[in-house]
Length: 226
Image (cartoon, rainbow, N blue to C red; front, side):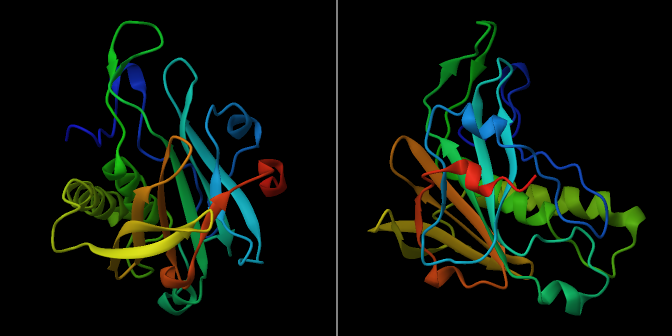
């Protein structure tokens, strides 16, 4: 895929990083990485009044921040005890991706691929999978399941004009914007162009995407709970 590379040159990765234990919320990092980003972060707008929390950032080999995620609502557990417990989880994660053309890597030894709306769709789709998996699935089968589902998410992100996606209009900084949107049994995923040199993606479960709005986060430290 030309614009949705999961691993770029010199180890610059567009895949979300996860380091989690079963039955606990997804691992979060400190605000430091977010503060190093040369682009604005997005989250849900002020209409959302629930909990907000940091997740993780993705960086290039030279340490440049390329993307990151902010969480809203209840932090999802990787392995809920039952399907019923999973269905009660309500969260939405906003993915902010720096919009970049094809460019040289920081050390000059490679080329980093361009980012696009497909990049945001891939990050959102794989992020949704990393935050949930069937409660009845045996642990020994999880890696195979995750590999299969992640490959499907990658293929779907490369075909935003395909039948799996519909169009959804949501406000970004108060202005209606068009997003690609799809649903699955695990939740929903959307992606579209943002403002200020970024591309937006989002995923969630238990919270309807149709009522969401996005805005620039004025103070990212307000998301830092740890």
